[in-house]
Image 1 (cartoon, rainbow, N blue to C red):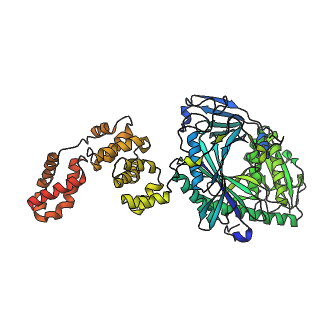
Image 2: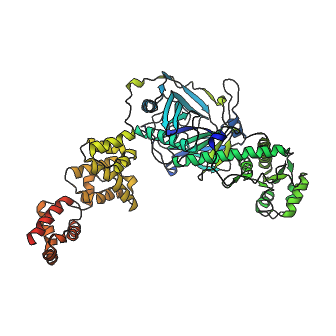
Length: 624
């Protein structure tokens, strides 16, 4: 496949979004622990869990949970000095956090949704280790909303308030290491209806929802704090949920590539059916490779492993067919093998290669009774893994003959996707008996000002230009900007410090992350009160970043920027003019620009630039 643009209307593209956004609340959703992230090396201790699927109230097992349980894994958790018994699943959860409920209702108002009368908490079965309890708690907050896009309205079906999962730190052969700092952070999940009909509309809808979320000023910012899941299907394909899209500008490409993948799978299905294709019996072909020089196969056999194979009758040339950039049907088969612990597969559309010889390929075909029109896939691993993996490959190949499978896929950095697990079903949801229902009353909730409205207000009220107004309104420091102007700080100065000065300091490798809102506000107040020249702000902030224990006043002293009197300013500038007397006499006010730089340097940020400018003009005029 070389083209990834399609007639989406003709293909019957239907897409929807699930937006997951962390809330910036003081405490977690079901306990009083802070929502701050920690470094793994700060962990105080660890503990382990083994998780297994349980049946729903109707006695059903969820397919996704069942597949996850087929691979026995141990989950280890990093606990911190702030970790509580609720996070460890050793104490019942507390009531839904009040602040999180309030923010969720604000978001519902912005999405034009109807808030439910009472919030009931449900358990969602999750046994990948991302929650110590084996399930995620979730509560419906609102329904039936709508947003506008350039291609028409998109319905918003529901808004859920749920707990964030644990942070995956390390993937191991026998399990996963998780960190509990993220577990339990309040998270809203916003699900749109299947109203999106183009990749561009998917991106537009996600950007609109993102703007509304940030308008609350109560959502976390940064990598991993917002994730977009995209549901995509075409008329002859199947509903596929793509998890973990972190970049908004990647959504349209992901939709485009998924449409292409499904369209190619439909063509492969039709071709396989025309060839009367089938999947043969799994076989042990270790003998074929007993003298192999292939590194992968040799390594598996030397470790006591085996080589398993499955003949794919009528598949020749199709296993290597491209579905997405650098991803083929063989990659899909390999994803399923990897899901069961194998490193991957080899198949005859790509062999001989990887140390496998032509003679070995011919012997392999003969061993499984495969002809030139057929393909063969093999797995080399320990006996148990090889058996599980080749069975998974056979199952996926058989599905390829019949249909495009419904499944959950993971987003890759390049916009392509990989198989994760089957689509989850209703069998993984059941009521949470430890958390009482909570009444919801949106009438007491204040509707936030939209970021688009803030941009207009910043221009009209504070005189900011359009670019700076948008930077501030959409930036992470917007709440601090509003606090600063409410405290009487000049709006243009505050905006410049937060958007330009901090950027300059980052480029100079200053540890800006060490500067708290209190630090920044204190420095702005010193400038507003005339105790620090604007020209000294960079030096003072750099001093605080190097030692965050300093107050703003102490940093001014440390940087040698204590204010100077007007007489001292005049004396310093008179000295500059005296040293450049010949230039002043020759050029008059034409020497101003050159002398201004020298005057500012002589005062080293101790005096305001406007004051220096006025005094310099006076001194030049005396000699001109």
